[in-house]
Image (cartoon, rainbow over all chains, first blue to last red; front, side, top):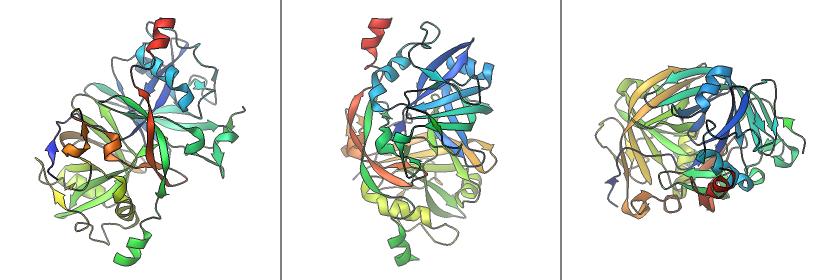
Length: 190
Length: 190
């Protein structure tokens, strides 16, 4: 089939839905972030792009810490709400029950399936966004989300995001084992 | 329920599955990459973390370009295979029918649902990985993957990745409208 050009404002499919927490002027604040990825193995680093217009960057710069929380599908309404209002106008600190790990300024959300507390590792100034790189210093979950000691995406039931159509999706069926499925071709092709 | 600490080597749920293309010593090469995210609005920038041990970084540095391709589920075996063998030992250029856009050194995969050609914007040296930031200069898809002119994740049927359990997943059901679902709470809470 013929390829058609669809401009340059393209996205990854899918993006994860996270709630990033930061302490701003002494108060916990949360915003949904889908522009986020793991980027380094040792130490474990996460990178995320946050629009400079947002309230959260000032808190991250102030405290040099942030958290990344993975909400389950039952938090979809609250998660979306966090993206509709700014911490500048609305106090989002009471929306969630909060806990802390080693870092006393990276507020984590008790109801989230997986929570990571991060120490700011590096900031890269981009044209419209800040690229924040954080080192994961602790990750927290609950026994009920684990299978064989590892977080199980079926149990966590996280949300996926697509842009520019702006939709949330659930995780679907198991499609195969990674670093394994291709072995048949490997033994054929060498 | 009680939170338990699960170390520091934590991941996002889910990660997208992409095939990143680069020209290395004149030959197209492809590797699967899940540590990747959009990070800047204008210009549109993508960031990805690639282990320095891989073959692809030298091609990106050499040509200052790369491509990001989103394979559909029917390419799962070939995609996984690309992650099992290195371009140093195996010629992966013949695995896919290739096309080029504006950048003559960013090989794109015809069979992929969405292909983006990127010009290297910035490189950030991390401890174990290179963080490559690329500007999307062209995105390509086919009419059959679009709904109302936008890429439709249901039609593209991309793969999701989870680590450290190393599994692929399909996209599931629609869960709601983003930047919309939270409006009920907004009108209640202000």
